Length: 541
Image 1 (cartoon, rainbow, N blue to C red):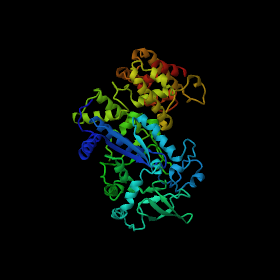
Image 2 (cartoon, one colour):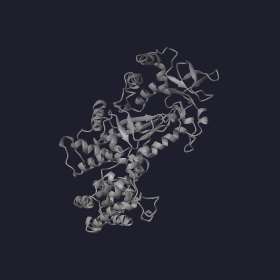
Image 3 (tube, rainbow, N blue to C red):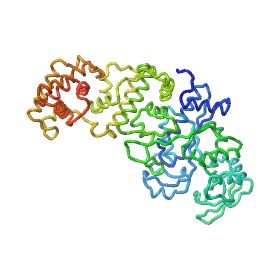
Image 4 (cartoon, one colour):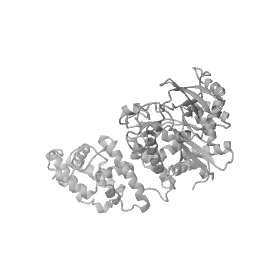
């Protein structure tokens, strides 16, 4: 393991937490969200940021509690577009989302369906927080004393909030909202607090008054800007990041750091994380509309380690894009280069070496593997998968030198690569080998002229005359000397036939994949296998 230096941003924040919060038996790191819709990859940035800091604290020998709050007692404000039976859901507007039915019929309620999606995926990424369900807590009255404290400090809270408001709050405002005992909706107005635990409110829908004792009834809830700092104190939170909207001037973090003092505590260490954009895939990130890119969507294309790498390798206050276009190739290449440097397969810039090692360590789901993954580029893997028509077992079996502890990692990458080819790769990146039984079918292949057939015959003769598959071993298709020899012979063929090399390449691509262009031809032929390539081309002669 690398020396315990603080070179990565997560380590720097771990030091800051220890310095500002003092030496503690256990440090509490927190995150959370309202499950008002699909939890998208932008929300995930907060989750993994906390996980990375937790790992950094543990590396320094500290005990850590990672809590994740589901704010499932928040109000159901908008029906997402991606939910079935929207007419039914509109009947539940302004009720707690934990009371809204799951019209997909996957879970017991709408909030729980969104929670389960995340709770099932996070362990795949090596993230295992302790979940706190706020609906359960509020409905079991565990915050009764905290609600009373907020009511006692009503005037101070109004003063704090008004520092950042253009429309001033007056004494008619209360730090709590109430769900009606009769309708479960929050269309209510607080009328009176008795100084203890009794709140009188009016149900505006029914024009009816009611009084509750919030020690025993589940209807009172603190407003967000009071609820957040209250829970900092209740859970003894030492660290919690927030998005740049919360960290904007006058945002919820500014007010919360003052309100938290009324509960007898102080704000946790925090930082602002930036937004994430999506490249190569339609849709705006918006939970309430249902137009989102979820954690599951990202794991379709990126292995868990590469997904973690995207976040571990980027400072939280930096915006970046998660790509589904050709940039996928570069992202995998960046991860592979980081891995190669970690295992000494590439030279390392000494100034960046320790940070790169930490990025690689933090990218792992669990422990750092004993050795590097199987060294094959994502682009080349995509070509192999298309040659084998998505047969992952055939691709894995083609690597004779793969180590046992590399197989599962490569299998996962194959699954992601095939998903990407199928769903996101540009059309001109995709191909399939022409089947020899279809070559005589004029509807399936190009019609070749006599000159084209001469080119095909010439290339077949080259392939059969000295470059045989057993000479280049067909293991990883990276034998540069064989590739150079083959490339030169293809150029020699073009010269001998008196045609431009580009014309020769076009004919061979059409014969092999029914397209005008494809991967670099010499490399492609070696990837297919010389014998197999010769067999396909010979079918035209």
